[in-house]
Length: 177
Image 1: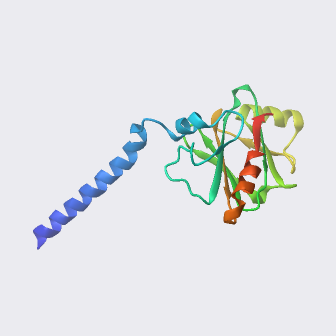
Image 2: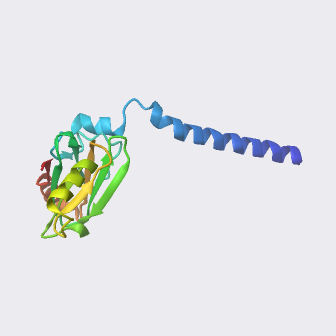
Image 3: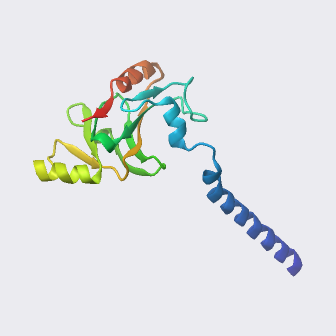
């Protein structure tokens, strides 16, 4: 009985070890990162709506419309304007390494849209020195790196409203401030 227990314990430990090693090693062994896959289809400084024919996602959710914008803050800040949709809307900010550094939802909107400006730490310090502290109507966001992605995700509330949701996301803008 004891021998069976020891063999079972050894097999379980070996399985856990193999699982952990594969989880840690696979992202480093991947041929392309998520940022590189999105960079192949998404333009810089403008939102690209991902349709079913040009998405790098393995199995996208048909009830969610997704758009991406790549940013590079080396030449200055980036302004973002996203009009609201009839359903739930979220905006996520990622570094080029895939680290999510900020996210907000449609509840952060004022006057039917989300407007914000994305800065590097040095740019944000200079803006605050010139213009003073942050104002309630001007959302300022600090990015930890100069390059990254902005992901918009909008839920389609009803099956017949997909075109309307896609139109709303197509009107979103990101570009130099």
